[in-house]
Image (cartoon, rainbow, N blue to C red; front, side, top):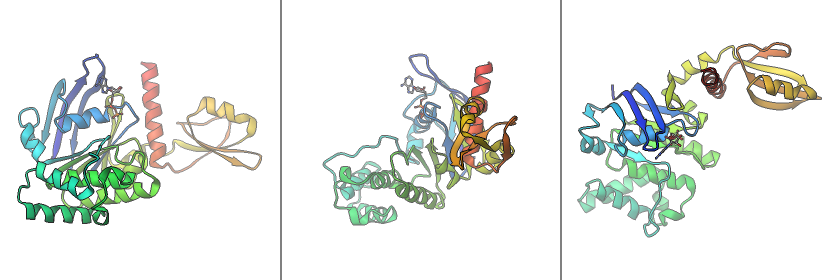
Length: 297
Ligand code: ADP
């Protein structure tokens, strides 16, 4: 296994228990960490990149024990944090050149070649003379991934990379990550957007309130929601009642009434039919079940 996490806990100094006994084995390729805000994704990512110490537990990355071999781990790792910022004084190519120097590329000619190749790779060669902080959101994200990749890491960790991007930029960025993951690199992608995972990741974990509530492939997660998604046709005055009884995913006007999609084990008392789930439905189903468990405990 590439990355092995065993019994990981993180309690912040204020007493908040952000990770609760997390264990998982992350295989090669693109791995998605999905969960709502506050689930503990960033906490886990920051531990994996050795920026934060866990309270207990073990992490092994490509054979290195994270608690004892931080330097070795950092050398094989690239990181794109959620709030990545660029220094105003750097142009795009200067910034990447700086990142390359930091990662230990001291030969000027080799560095220039590596920087130019990387700019091509992420589609920023034409923008190389523009100031980095003036680039569009999508371009900034691509420059962020370029700096994480410049020293050819075996593992790349990307925290919420598509937040704030428009749909076109989001698709372009996902495609870029997919291409990179085909070059024998493992990518861990944390996101609260289901579409980021469904279109790119072979394996995934669902996190909620500091715990892993699902681990497997997106197809397996989808299977869990089979038979749990319903389309209900109702008149206008029944909408409130449906909303009270079931988690509503979508509401579309239909004739004089509504067509409502809900997730539930069973629907009674309405004109309802089962429909095939999407990953988005499965996500809602898991979150609702977690919520019920939490309320009942
Ligand atoms: P996510 O990335 O999934 O949104 P985080 O890992 O950022 O989740 O946060 C998990 C939980 O830990 C949240 O409830 C958050 O408020 C809390 N948290 C994060 N950082 C700190 C901190 N430095 N001190 C105390 N609590 C924190």
